[in-house]
Length: 229
Image (cartoon, rainbow, N blue to C red; front, side):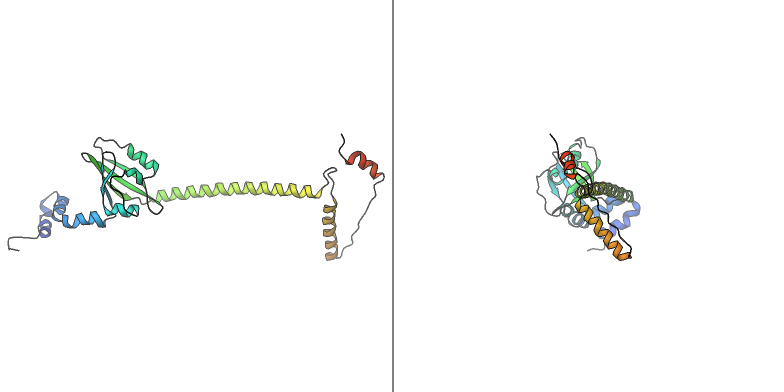
């Protein structure tokens, strides 16, 4: 290198204060660094689409976003959830630049929310996409939604428990009474007698049992104890 030659990096750094186009100066001087970075190392997804939104090319940031390779010529919609495909289809072919939030499907299973800038560039589009990082308000909204869901589930569970308790009480009552007379049956009598005997034994208290005979029971049962035509 001669004495009159300078390295591009040195030249651009000395010219920064003399130009208003500082970024352009650095870009031109360091394409050999910036291009490989954007193509292979950056997590910024960069896509080139035709006017039908088919993928013409993409960088490694897009590959990492998907969790695997993509197929050139395929519609970008193939890698989006339905609602995002609809939003992309509504993008006008008028040279307008738009900011979109798209949901990409990722392998093996998952979804990435990506904030995209879509630029109309002649006969196609250039898309720059960054993974969406939730703001505090987004987290609060998600927590509120989860809390509402848990509250609804708790309410439904409480209702089902009450219904179950009511059903169990009905079953227990039907097991303890005679269906015709609605009086306590022998099973319920045995339960109450066993409980009374156990209590009397435990506490040393006296227990009385009264048994009564119903006169003319057969006639009463024949008259009232069975169904009549």
